[in-house]
Length: 71
Image (cartoon, rainbow, N blue to C red; front, side, top):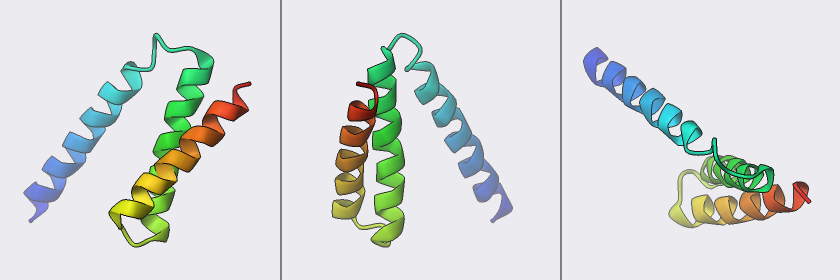
């Protein structure tokens, strides 16, 4: 069980690094939109107990807020 946990943690860390490096060429507004969508998806998933609709809804709301903050 420990090896599965360690593999999952390693895979998530690698995914986070790849995702963050993809934002290097983006504008400030694009970066804020992506960060807002990610944070919103996490928040939506937590608040709704992991439902798909809550995750997608949170990502949409977070993306819109992140987009507007950059203006």
